[in-house]
Length: 369
Image 1 (spheres, rainbow, N blue to C red):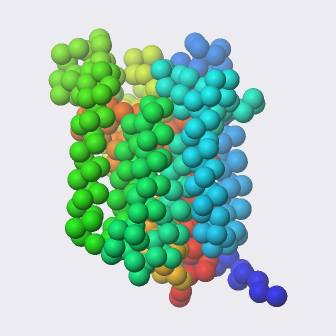
Image 2 (image 1 turned 180 degrees about the horizontal axis):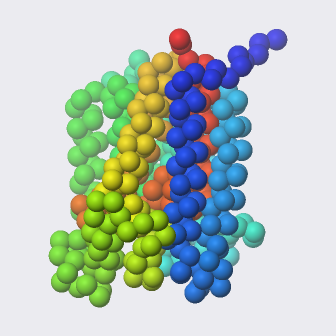
Image 3 (image 1 turned 180 degrees about the vertical axis):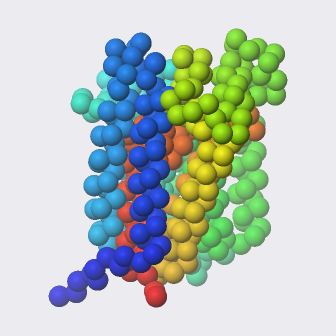
């Protein structure tokens, strides 16, 4: 009977796990620091968000361990079911009583004891599906017939996510689609066509929603409405600026005193910048860079095309989310909500990203020397 080889504790795998665990632990500390005041006022419990984050971290560790020993080739065989499940979950958010509306968006499913965010799951379901399709059809990838399943799947997910509405995750899935097609070997002319379509959709999505136009205006000149649409970006810039070189010290943020909305989630990097300064931000970005480089190295050494594409897609989504999150909080692009991987408050995101790292470990386990 064929059995899998034991998990190889090579340097890349060990370093990857240690860095991810370090980020998760750091995230728990920062979630408490950023949310303690708002959680105490809103829920009468300063550890409200921290408890949820710890539960997410524990479940995420189980997910990481499970997928580290779960043959990633089985994910390829389940790719259609995973894509279908992701589409179903995204559709369920629009059903009354099941979908949860918050801040004018329906992005969560009510499971009774907790809620989940299907769009976080859909990102990785798409990566698995795209990796499977592009690896199976690599001889046809230069033609439209070879790339249409991946492109159509990405378009369907983007449509369902933007209807929630959630432009940030829509951007992530769109960018990931382009990354997967590029790595899969798409013809340059087709890449330019799909890239142009994605870029053309951005202004369209902004124009059709009035609140996005207001956010764009606030991005161009946040001080024109410092108490309105520009409030969050102005407070984020105050937070980053206050940190200067070495920060005001862990736990000493002033912006967390209800000045900066969503300080524990989408704008947690602003609190990190305030408390740990430029040096702390640079150290954090260095850890992310090392993680992404390690995953890419594992992708290069994968035993087959599917494993290579799968690991590359995971590296791509981590890099995309980190870059978009930091660009938003620093005022480099218009404001849009997106969690910082492994750190921001949000159990679904944390569990899924940690499980994805487990998949990478399994790819490394079966890789070439």
